[in-house]
Length: 167
Image 1 (tube, helix red, strand yellow):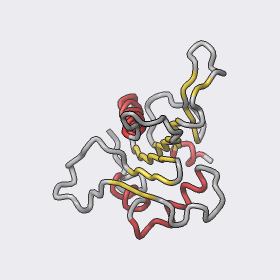
Image 2: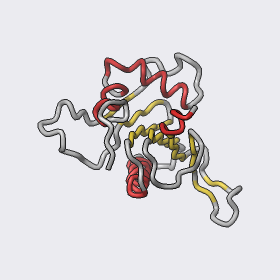
Image 3: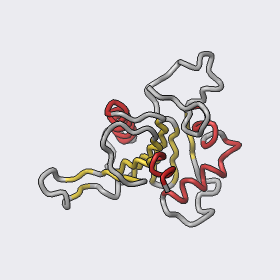
Image 4: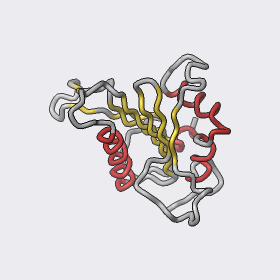
């Protein structure tokens, strides 16, 4: 498996660059661009959680958690970085976003619309996720792909770093 320790695709660098409170402005700007929100609209609105590897006893301690989870208004954004993407990584990523969605459901409460969006920054892609720089997936009917359900509530996006390099 290829691991690039010199770029933002490195797990520690990715998390600390975007999730650390001292770097909140960069995260706000990234999300405003990805979600096509007005500049400055997320200032001081983000609730961010992530597992800092810098503050762990052992860098190889890993839990089944997302890289960076961000919540604001009625939107929950999961940010993931994969320096190598294969089918197993896609399964893992999908599991994370489903787990996040399910964790927001409270027994006996209404199914309030919480939008859950996942952005996977991926490099060295070894599975079919689409040819574009950004490939978006949602729930569609397998026979009639123009029929989509909960499209505005659930999305998985893959941003291909390898395709950005080609631009």
